[in-house]
Length: 435
Ligand code: SAH
Ligand code: SF4
Image (tube, rainbow, N blue to C red; front, side, top):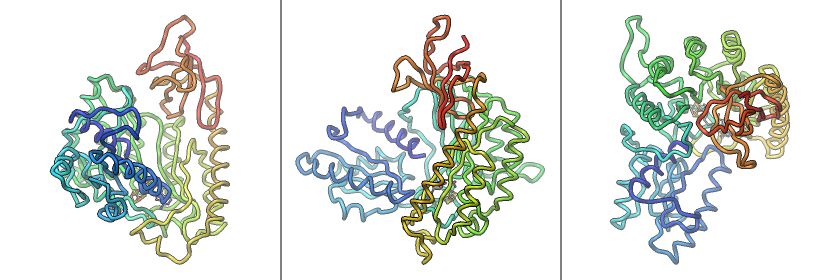
């Protein structure tokens, strides 16, 4: 989500005539797009800002901008902490960068953190990849998970219309993009805020409807979406994914904890039994699907047994990848004020044990690729070996392969290549082109 926001803000700057500086400490304008999901993400920005603030003391024309979720969370407090900052702007204001900079040019110090209706995007993102593109479909989040800062910094849900989304995707296809990833904090909530009921009394604009609506855009070969919430994940959606050939066989469905009591305290609104049911349904309909997830350990009050249930679920489901984190208390979230916080030592121990299981499980799951043929979309050159390309399987496994095929054909980024997988590691594969 942050990368997508950064690309849109970079697009605005480019349109205004800015171009990329050779180094961070050379730039005339510095914009930090920040994350506050955990404390260590937030702290990073202060060390970066310190260096730029020093530069500004000798280079008064330097423009210093803090965007994103730390900006939203801290607002004016950021100016008190680093008075050299020119502009503090929350994530809902990303598309307004040009207008906000005009205020800065008038000599103001600007703080843009008020609730804002995200206007239909007139910005053209400056995208890092020429092959794969992010497409926002819903901004914000209406959930209230007790650990999570996202709703307070990204605001309420705002869905884009199916027409606007499709037209962005058509534009991407014309530019040669092959893969799109639809983005939402809770993408299953897509359309809840849009009008329209079907004759059967069902909501008209669900994620499932959106997938069907955009599926035939010519030139787009692959469609992904993230992040799915187990509470809203429907059988209709799984059915659609199994029917629509461009929708890739990968699901990112965070479960956060393997224990029902903890899930309740997190206010996640589902049980592990429901989660297992979703996984079973996916595996029944799409047997080769890969499944990834997010997990938090050492949530306030989590005991050893509850932690073990998280480990058990990982082993049982066989996740291809799990993003792991130790619980980090966040401002303005209920769990941060609870008295039963766990000590750092327990957080570190549990995280270590979890990470080692995640790695072993991923490696075990990856053995299913050994020797099989997979279609990989080449995304770029392997930075560690100029003779190799890298890309991903439909199931989202990072894969490296020689750019030259057996008959001397040279493959390029943007091409779909059939590979035989020759080596599997925990989080990546290697293969050789069939042709
Ligand atoms: N909307 C997505 C995830 C958004 S945040 C969802 O609901 O799943 C990405 C991940 O960061 C979360 O899935 C969670 O695992 C982690 N996370 C969020 N808040 C956290 C906190 N306070 N401490 C540790 N991890 C956290
Ligand atoms: Fe945070 Fe929960 Fe919303 Fe995800 S669904 S962004 S974890 S509040």
